[in-house]
Image (tube, rainbow, N blue to C red):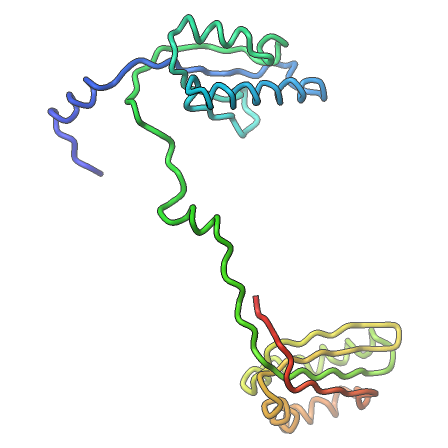
Length: 227
């Protein structure tokens, strides 16, 4: 915590001035479509007061408590009371309010985004670079649910453990009325071929009872973008 000595405190206090604190309360009538429209206009008016510098700090409440929000007016107590009596939400009985004279420090403001966060939020991240990879697509004919069950029980544990070391990137299996279609993405064809000859993979294939692919297609140079 920053150390503040007495001299600095006195300098800051000497520069302070009086503002008017608004505490806005919800009433039991704050519900319904008509109320929503009035609250919308209340908010629009707050935006206008903020743009004019009269209500430089406005903080609507975001919980379900009795308070609708708070604000700081750069006006006298009488001026602020007159402004609030004309508020559409107050006039409709949706809100009540209380005003208090408070002391504040000119130039204070609510903290913004962390340093650099505004530029980061405004600028979308660069699109990941596409890579050339190997895609294989094969279909298995049969009952999709039966085929999936055998795949999950016998093939997936071996694939999950061994395939990444051979350059496997992703696998998508689509169940259809005629069976399964599987799309496998590898860094290269050589890695896919090495995995297909793994003894454990061959044994898992045999144990699974899965049929030989009905169709098989290979695409050696597909463009893949990983987000």
